[in-house]
Image 1 (cartoon, one colour):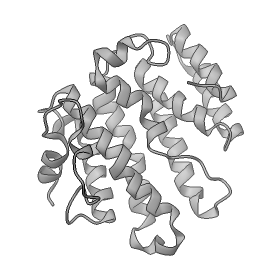
Image 2: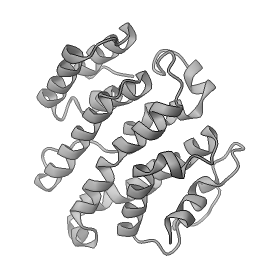
Image 3: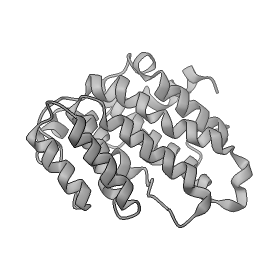
Image 4: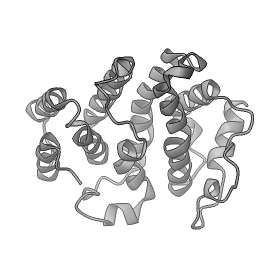
Length: 225
């Protein structure tokens, strides 16, 4: 499958209630694409998202990303957890796919999400633009939970934390909120690392809103919504 075919398959659908991928009875949502190919296609999509997703509306992009992170990316992540089939997809491919999420946030979320009240305190931003919901919930619905007790997950967990740190540095409230949301969920697995990331953000960032500061302090405690 070419990247053009992949983009068309994922994003070129009407938005009319039930997402297209919830209507199928089949588990194979992308016929003929194995996990390694899926990771590579997701990586290319994220790294070139500004151009590749330009033809689609915010609602279409949000719907397609819902498939990408809830089903497609999760398939890759779950494979990373399966030691018995760890050789079926190269670890570097998974790490690259994960780190490429920062490019998606820079090219799409920071450009197309509404920079308004945070999603955790007001539904207005979510109702106004479905991309705001995709941005806010990204790290919760991907099931990318930290697993420091599994030695094979060390590099993957490190990459996820680094990616969230990159996104936190993007000067856009929706991106910062998303990263803090993810870090708040990881607080109980990597308490010192999460606290260091957020404190450094608070110490070095200029012109961040009071809402972001309050949410950051909640994330440090692991009491985020």
